[in-house]
Amino acid sequence: MKIKTLDEQTINQIAAGEVIENPASVVKELVENAVDAGASQIKVEIFGGGFQSILVSDNGSGMSRDDALLCFMRHATSKIQKVGDLSYLSTLGFRGEALSSIAAVSKVALTTSYEAVGIKLEVEAGRVLSLDPAPRVKGSSIEVRSLFYNVPARKKFQKSVSASSAEITKLMTFLSLAYPEIGLSLWHQDKRVFDFCASENRQEEMLVRAKTLLSHDFVEDIHVVAHKQESCEVLGFVASPVKVRVNRSGQYLFVNRRVVICPIFSYAVRDAFSTRIAKDRHPLFVLHCTIASHLIDVNVHPQKKEIRLKEEKNTKKVIQLAVEKALEKGSQRSAPVSISYGHHEHSFWTKEVSSGILYDSLSESKQESFIENTLEVIGLFSHYLFLYPQSALLKIVDAKETMAMIGIDLYAAESKILFDEMRKNQEPKGSQTLLLPDTLSFSKAESEGILSILDELHQLGLKVHPIGTSAFLVEAIPEFMEQDQVRDLMLECLQGSKEQGNRKYAAILCRWVRKKKQPFSQERALKLVEQLLCLPDPLFCPLGKRIISCITKVQIDDWFK
Image (cartoon, rainbow, N blue to C red):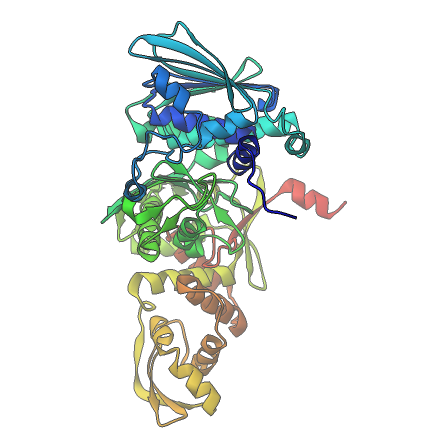
């Protein structure tokens, strides 16, 4: 078969296939064009899931007669003039492909006004049908009808009308959060889905829109993110670590106002949550990342969904630090919890915070009485402590009065306490130097492995030095450990974990605490609970698993059915 040059219509339809995937793709391109035109108000009207009709109207700068004709030609754009401009993009569009691709697979009517002169241009399957004067005050309106009417193969594999409508709503949700300063409205079949006014306060309006568009759980307890470092600025908010999902559906990320897919940024946020959530859970967030344009390459995907970063590691660190700071500030906030102590009211926690630790307002002499008089024990079974649900505890765990009892995993509680001490002090609190250093011998293979993890051992408060080829001198051990347990912990660290950073230390601590199987007396259990409730985040262990669980009467009734 001989090689032939394709005709213009076939070329346009192939190009359209790369840019216009579905009705949501059309909406995205048209709304982004309106944003680039400086619009402060954009209205999107959809009929038949976008297959029947899509109408996008704006109050932007509009186009002259000549520009209106040029805009439907491939690679005709006002955004860039030369190849060097690709490195300093300040607009969403730049290739000049969107309108030509849309027009190649639909019937388009453009009404626009520039310097009080209005025109209407009609294009069908890429061919201009008419150009006439038309009344319009300002901006542009583009109506796209009969999408994919001339590409039956493409239309055959499209989603249903309802699924397409849902996809457009999802896209407009992203765009509304991306541009809180622009008024955006969405209508389906003449029914309003949402209608937001323009606002000068981006942060405040973004929160208003999030409360309207996202779930209640998403925004009822959030941590504001605001951090700038070198060439990267991060703004937005993250939901409480308690509010997580099994997938990334609650993650709204914008880079230089673009709606993009960037796993690196998602991982950065996930790493910031670190030990606050379980490994198989994903945090919820709305984040705007502003990065110097010359450090980003957006010309890597036909629909501009993906980007590349020149300083990937540094950018990830900035995002991770921004979220970590927000979470740390959030963990310092706690409303006072009033509990009954004798015949007086006392504040269990105060709002005064230092170094992220909430100080107990009860005097040290009353600590024992507080535990004895406030925490009523139902029973202690193995490493589980069950308590009656007093109001103070219910407030801490954000539970209702209908709870029958509260259960606490003491192993998880101990891991949490030890891990928080390690993070706070860079080594466990009260790491003690041995009066007589101990010598431990290992096999050659074990010794080589231990040499490679000396820094990790030190991080855990275990100070050891090699002696010869297969022995180590132990000079100091953490307070939580007996001297005869050192070998077991070293071998536990040697066994290692696939986790990285804080999660690795968390995994080691959690596994070691459970392996030592130290029995719990009621006195020791209550002491652990006392320490646990003084931590900023007492609900989850270092690996994100629940420490405190509430059991309802309904659950108990179900056990006996």
